[in-house]
Length: 377
Ligand SMILES: O=C(O)CCc1c2[nH]c(c1CC(=O)O)Cc1[nH]c(c(CC(=O)O)c1CCC(=O)O)Cc1[nH]c(c(CC(=O)O)c1CCC(=O)O)Cc1[nH]c(c(CCC(=O)O)c1CC(=O)O)C2
Image 1: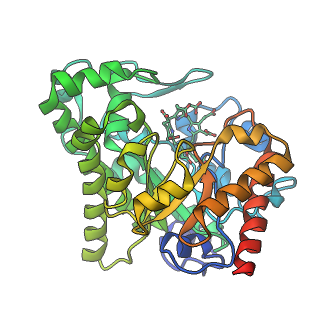
Image 2: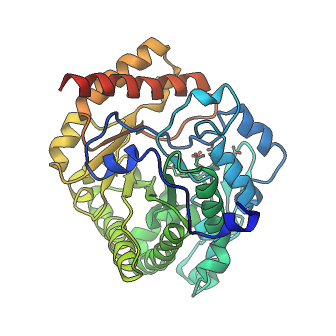
């Protein structure tokens, strides 16, 4: 294949392992598929080496670098010892904060500290600083290129997942100016400036819809929406400031795919710590609901009533346990969720100090225990 063909989003290699897509649609599988949030990242020596001394967002803007970082964890394409992680899906290397950048905000990644917005939004008047109309192709075309390139280079081994931050989570970063434990500056807006909050949430939603659509057009085979800051909202605020936008995103992406004559792709909503909203999330036009580790698998099944597939939810810290203990924890988890309509994952991303060997043990345990359960039925 010519180099230029790798940036054209067509003639992709045939998909060989569609287990993840089948599980997302609730279809029969031979084993439970597994992937990890933050699987391409910091816990891998290869990642640290290739990222060393480079600006994070500069890396995100390089389709070749994103492709290489994504492929590092995908079967057969990376050097030992990682070849033993047979993940069933790949997630494009990027970050949720590229969307506030597309709206015109400056975001920097401060080593050891995390994302920093030098000039966060303080008052509703600051909304005027945002681009009123975002040309998503111009601002985020580098992500689309990374997706197309990666989809070609994956050679159909596993499907490629695209992602975005959800409106409330991005709004809270834009107001807090970085990470926060209370999110009190952003929540102050919800209570003091509800109209301006809705205006911002709508503006983010419009960009996110185009962004996700562009990712599918570029080759993403599934989409995950990260509402990582659900836990600081109560049920009433969630219903007013998060859920309607999550629903709007899924509905509009699906409608637009149909209008463009494109196939539907499974969509995953991950509202971290949003256990109170499980029933509503399972009726929000997403095929899959992602769960953090505070939710019991059996009760999640009951509360979502077979309407969606479920994804999750081992406590990432369980990766500090021995391989034997990881295997036991995984067995209990897979038995709890059952093997149908289930995608194994952690309840949140892999932490930087985790041992790649433990990630491998997690993946292997999911495959082994689920095969045993399926053979017994
Ligand atoms: O610590 C945090 O997670 C929050 C702040 C943070 C973000 N990007 C960041 C950092 C600094 C850091 O990770 O140290 C900066 C960031 N983003 C990313 C990385 C690489 C890694 O974590 O290993 C890093 C660390 C960069 C580095 O250390 O060099 C890449 C990233 N962010 C994200 C994803 C999607 C995914 O999780 O699979 C992915 C790529 C996929 C992959 O690596 O496999 C998504 C993301 N980024 C972010 C959030 C919000 C999290 C929250 O606020 O609770 C979220 C969504 C979530 O994890 O729930 C913001």
